[in-house]
Length: 218
Image 1 (cartoon, rainbow, N blue to C red):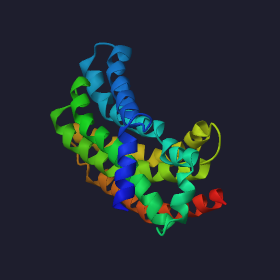
Image 2 (image 1 turned 180 degrees about the vertical axis):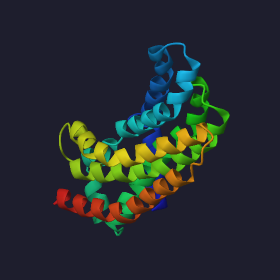
Image 3 (image 1 turned 60 degrees about the horizontal axis):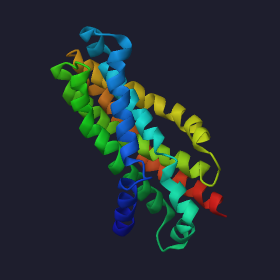
Image 4 (image 1 turned 45 degrees about the vertical axis):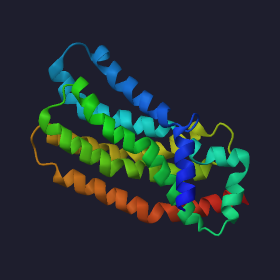
């Protein structure tokens, strides 16, 4: 399992893995927003939590189709399916590798980009906590969508349509926690809801992803 995780991390960091693509997209979205809404620091501060969360969500979405696509194209996915490793463990490692190469860099970069959007000082901690709790769920749900669409040519659009509705609760509670923190309000409740969603997806979706993947590989 560790060898598979290290292999996926190397593939994720190298060209074609989506590591730099998601980070660059996140940076572009956040830096272009001030040009679009004009030089209004108060407005930037009020929309910063939502913009940062939406940018992180879309950046994660960009690399989802690569979770199984590279292994499917070179045939290694069939070999992994026949290896003495439970399929549930395989999809869990894929989701973990995706989070480490896509979600975690976004968590680390988001507070820096919050400065560009004039995010208030009280908003950095809840923003970081909400991203830290919510982005793993984005990767787990995305792995489920990638398992559904593996082997489908140009399935990226279908994957986005399948996954985006499942991302909505995470976006709502994540942005709400960051907004409440930025305004100095209690943000424990949305963080707890976010943690509950993440725990639920981690507990259930690897089994669903493994079942779907077995069907697609037959």
